[in-house]
Length: 426
Image (cartoon, rainbow, N blue to C red; front, side, top):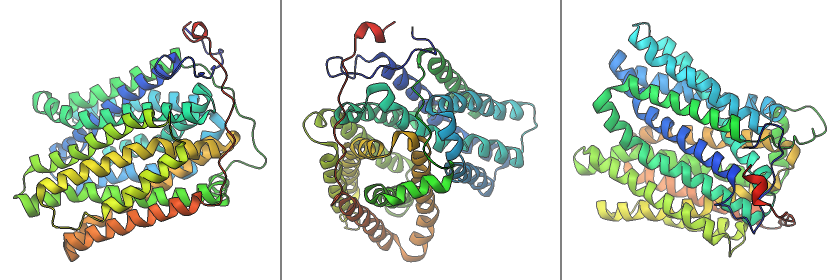
């Protein structure tokens, strides 16, 4: 087993992604913690309703987590860069485990109220953007700077995430019906602890990137993104796209109520259609990256995605909408890993952690705005105008992806070092 002082050896073409031990550890940790997070995504609002009976309190509690994601996405960028991705991931999992466990403990002791819930959720949300960015930043140190290998590693990581997102809510609902919300939250706490142990024991230190000139700050990370044409336009495009996606997810229950008589099964089925398409596309992306450059694959998928959203306002019926969600989910899955790979490799190593943290915050702020505004727009103007708005957002995002890629050269392919499997399996 590798120890803390063992450097990560990049994977070479002869080793392959599936046989890379360190990457398997990352995938296992992500699958475990993300599955637990998806269980909590169902259990936490359920516990708030069980505690207070107030939908307003539930919204306040969940909004506190989103607020922390936005705040620490920017102001946590500097310490993310200083600590390095491995340390951020370890701290994130180690701290969130007791924080999540605190909620059911306080509930059982009859000491949990809305204010305490808000504070704990804010603390949990503080780690989301730095943790997500650190996962992206650490991959080049694990598999190397080769675009194809990094793209396939990103696809594998996103596949683990999407599988958890697909299975977690259904499993969470079943477990809550059998055990109640507090025990399900304890399962999430254990998942964070297990992930922390895996990363602590099996994830070696990555070489610390040399500090770049000037003081690390959120503004510096933002300027780095905006100074580069591709990074700047793609960051805005991802924020617009996330706004459209979250708005669409928020409208699925509205669609079920307006068109299908309020069936929760319909709402869940539509979300599952997207999740299944996205998982299939992500799995296929790893294979396509063997044949096509990441930039070309990412651009093709995002442009097709913008075109696909034009069908959303049409009178599709339930079956047509289901098929459309499968298709756009598939296009999202095919293009996400290539887009992530191009963006990561374009950011200088010394600034990757903080720049990616800021970029993650921008996307999440866009998603939060989409979630918050979609219901109001649909209520005041109706579903059709809301759908046209989502189509306009995705088309604008597609245009920005193309604009950012035009006239910007791809980075030179990094030389892949061959890995000795024996070194990686110690």
